[in-house]
Image 1 (cartoon, rainbow, N blue to C red):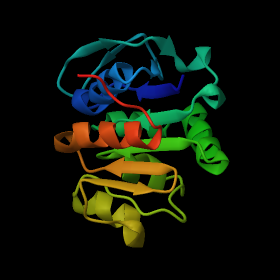
Image 2: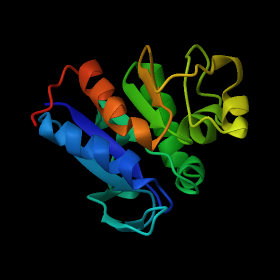
Image 3: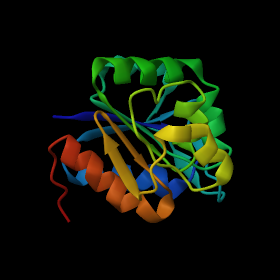
Image 4: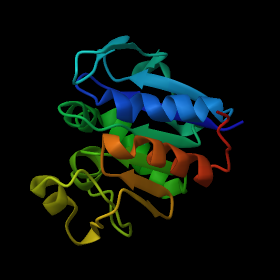
Length: 173
């Protein structure tokens, strides 16, 4: 059974966090929502979400995939958590799947120089596109080796299905 970590932080975009959780669980994966701070996480739209676990309770090495939702300041908050950043870097280097949507490809991955050798998309704000630089592609979802990125909440289902496809999972609806 595939095991996926979805990282949560205050200010996250709830569609980008919870759509993958729903779709991946329907596909039979074990999905842990992991908060970087408190058990209750408040989304960018004021929705409270109860995380399954806290980052200090898990080892990111045991997950087949890590999902990084966007939203601001959620992506910035995740980017400042060194446990997550180091876990994502290790996952990429080991060939495990990392998936980032909206602001996260720019604010987390590009900021920490984790896009070398990958193409990526993100929310099409000029600052985000510039952060990704020549690695940027204008697509809803971009799969590049063991990295899947997406451009925002409108692509949350497509993003989730791309994760399922990569992990060879079939969601049941």
